[in-house]
Length: 502
Ligand code: BES
Ligand code: ZN
Ligand code: ZN
Image 1 (cartoon, helix red, strand yellow):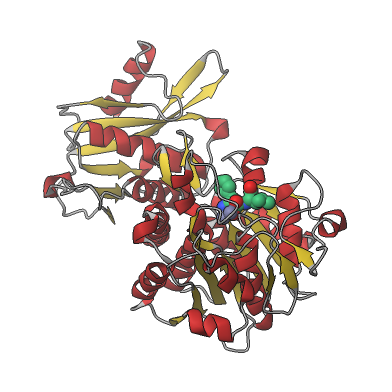
Image 2: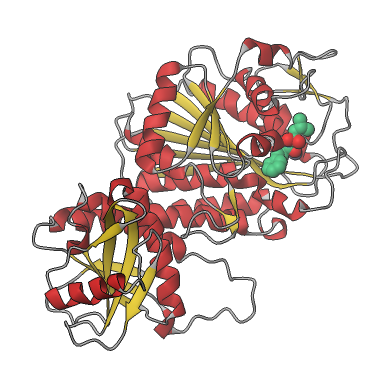
């Protein structure tokens, strides 16, 4: 998909896109549309008067074969009530417009920025709209035999700046939206790819390939022998039940002087979670391909940070493994020793994410970072608590908590702070080892999991854990720019915003 600034010399696009909004009372709203061409304005106003178009958020209509302007078809996209319009409204409108244009087979369109002149920041609106279009354009069809797209079905958009809009800001928005969305789509592809085509070694190779030509970005991959040598007993232990060897993926991006402390991002890269000997029920087990989304999303985040050339030093760490039931698999009661020497009783082999993250958090702490952020599809309890609307995050650091909330708001992602206390830590003590991998009390499974992880973060390093079990893949039709089923790339936008603030 191409989204470019409209060139004055270029032929007019076949289709024009205008945004509309409403004002006034809920039960008797009036239409507002910023559009210089009086005839076009009248076209939609008449439609509104007739009750055919209500300009609700995510409503679309088209007038074909018009001669009112240089564009033959005119599409109007509703943004809803003017008072509620924010940047996310534009991302949503993009997804709606994309689906509509596709259904109408209108693959070439021009976005009229004059129609959102009322919005406080045209650059940000353009950014969100462009990002929404790129996200909507992602599809994993590699595994379907009739997957060839015709050339005429490739979307191409142009953005026509209005007189008051700053062209340079819009151009920059388009470039940055494309970088970010493509990195998010890369993470989604990693997530959606089934377990047989996304093993730990393939995940590592895909990361290396994606980072190949990116300036100041280096990828190192440790194999099983190295993982053993590095005393990563958690990662090694979890991988024993599988025929696929584990990997430890390290991405280093240097966008700032060496003297500046790095920010570490850690992601759970469990390429398939069958549960191990504590096997999972069969229903929906295919969804456990998504158990590497923490890793995938951290990889996509750092890729985007590097491509956006952020002035920050970043390290991404992804422990990658399968959790299977082979003859060498962990048995309930087995004891593993993590990189920092702490011993762990494995009372349930399905609580494996925390075991592989333990080693990665130890390694992250050794880098003396400014902060550590980890993302993981860690607990089913998270899905029960917050569904697939909010990502729960855990930190004891108040300053960090507000920094995260601000970044999420800027990124238009929904996050919710969750508790982590000494009560939760006490529940994770082991009987025959330092720690147990499951809690001794019922309830608060996401908080006790977070408290377990805390044992591997060195004192004094600001740390936050993001449990994306509910938000890593989509269920239902909440966002117009995401399909009803599939990986979402959750927390990537927040992580990028966070990295901008170090
Ligand atoms: N990958 C799962 C968590 C999960 C469950 C993610 C459902 C997304 C949807 C994790 O490895 C797991 O199985 N956790 C257990 C922990 C329990 C045994 C303490 C869980 O949540 O049931
Ligand atoms: Zn599990
Ligand atoms: Zn898991």
